[in-house]
Length: 243
Image 1 (spheres, rainbow, N blue to C red):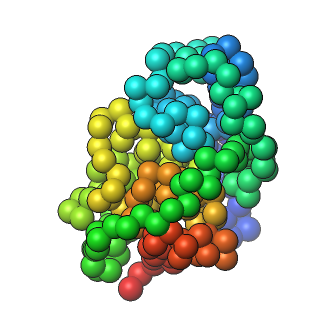
Image 2: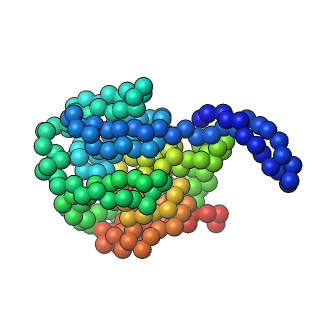
């Protein structure tokens, strides 16, 4: 966060004040020496973000394929080495501009179709548990309380919230959660993914990439997210507010 001088108008009364504002940085990701993407993101937990981004976009299938990762916070660059060197040509990337915060770029490739198989999970959780998780989730970010300028995501078991992460973009927040889970060897197939934003098809595909059975959000889902969720047997819990 950065404190900036602002003018506050409250009931017609104007005054100067210092106000905390969420930070935004452009992080360029280079994979095997080739520029892949630039993410507009919050400057915390960047290794989580990069690893999660590579995993949810199908560039790595597991953490062992990521051989090294360095973050240069002076130039805001992430240098990654992964197994193989012909990934861009082999995957035949198609760039799609997302409906996320800013003009995000994601990559779709033929592997996406492979992931559209039914999860086949017998995981279940009571609705009261999800409601209680969301109450905690909405209050656990100090930066959100101060700036109201970020999104949050979290990984939860049936018992508790395990990994919370914040970012100015909801896609990034989710990738940070997934990246940290990969680093700490936490499995996904018996977990719940929480998000503060809406559920778009891309947000849903991140949960599906991890084979997570439940995705819960404060926001609403899109029609494509619902259709894909029904196709693969993933439970969406949208508009989790109050009772």
